[in-house]
Image (cartoon, rainbow, N blue to C red):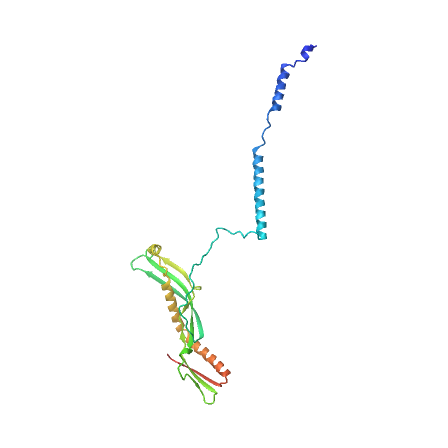
Length: 248
């Protein structure tokens, strides 16, 4: 049986366990895992960003702020000078017919005994243009219109139809293929020729003009002018209308 004095005195083993328990209760709590804090911060950032986007869209929809635009969009600035009127002239032409043409120009510039890969330039150009056939009433001479005594017939002598200058339509014309030698490319980089295509354009216009002369466009203009004058003068009471053309 233990003694009374021994009961109130803790054993060394219990004392050590008590100290261990006391030390555990006073120890600071372990910090929460860092991964959960980073995830929570990321959610806050995403939520704030979404809120900002919603607010901006709402403000833009209401029209309070101006429309947001891409700061890197392509802009075109036209600094051209206003058109200058050089001259005006009265026209007395009656355009009686028009022909539309297309021509293929195959132009090559090279040097003899020089390989094509070194010095050569070949352009395949498809040109589209139109030519008008007209009668110039401004050149009518005195006595060109002769009316009969009874007022039933009239004779008109007109100048022969003429062909206007060829109008090359650059919107419908294009370079189909182009070959250039090494020296041609280097020369263009050093001192490029902005009028390099002018020769091709000129050849296309010459070919179209020649084709218009051989196409019967002038004869079509004669027939259309005659029909126009016959219908006009018969509506004025003339029963017989004669139209003749004078060669230039």
